[in-house]
Length: 437
Image 1 (cartoon, rainbow, N blue to C red):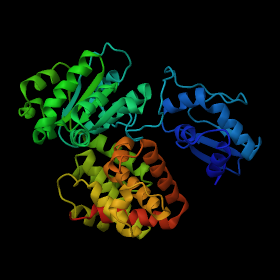
Image 2: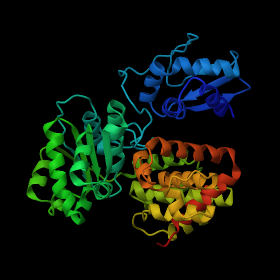
Image 3: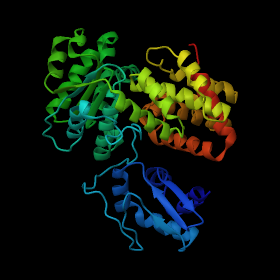
Image 4: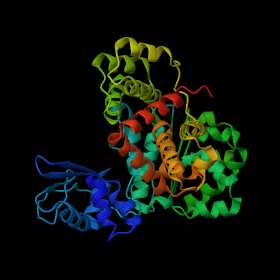
């Protein structure tokens, strides 16, 4: 494969850390017939950073490996050393220590599907992502029913802030994730670690009802971030009145910022969301099937889970699904939101298939079959749960986010190159989604 050969060549002049940073996120597509190599980027910020920091090394490597007869094509608009040029987007370049979307490549503002109904929350989230210490929307608070897209906007904001400050300067996770981190480290040490961040984004604030010790700590964190002009963002299911369990000091602090309500996506938005997810899953659905799903499922999360089931079934039978098969999938799915798949379920399924233990997967052991089991489990956690790369690293024994990023990218690529891996991932997805817990 060209990408592997090129990476091996670049290792002579680039460190592994550099390759993880700017080479591994690239999507290279070689057209032998037309003698052209198309280079795709995960998002526009990456394209602008790549042009400034890595373009010359990349093009020199391509010329060394494939020669000068292959034309380089950059859809994002890159001025190449051979002087073929297309204008880049007009936004200014952003400094970044970690240019891939660490909190999920799918979570960008451009990918947030909406219409005028939720135009203001999207515009407000974009404004909250802008640089500068005079933050008008601080804290920025997203509320609304479960499955309306709050997590998407929160993670899109986290990705924008990570592009500005670097991944390690942004904490983005759920209330449970933050609570788990406090359980693994002494409280004051953990507070110092978090206060060193440039941004704090906390999802599922309503889950603080069961975490009274974290509520007290969050008040202290809030004061530090607010006093130092650092961006905060929160999301919770429901309205502010539903957070009546919060102590008065914390509730009053949340009311200092901008609170926006995400409305339920209407039919038009749900149809567009289904088309976007089908494209990501390489899933072909008849127009009637799309409308059926959009009419019967009103939440993004529920739709995403159903489409995963449909894709898993498609992979299992090796063809597009029939009307009766879609109806059967719908009948076998609760009318409410899709049950979340627990990380332990995924890790156990991968461990069972590869003949290892969950403890092996979470360890630092480097035997080939354990590494592959770990990588498959990371990929499935990313696909089925939507875990961010930093969260994946913590979930799998405290590994670096770049390790999780590499694992997900590797398994994703292997599925295209290896039919057995494709079938295995489809089977493990089906097993995890149908797990009775």
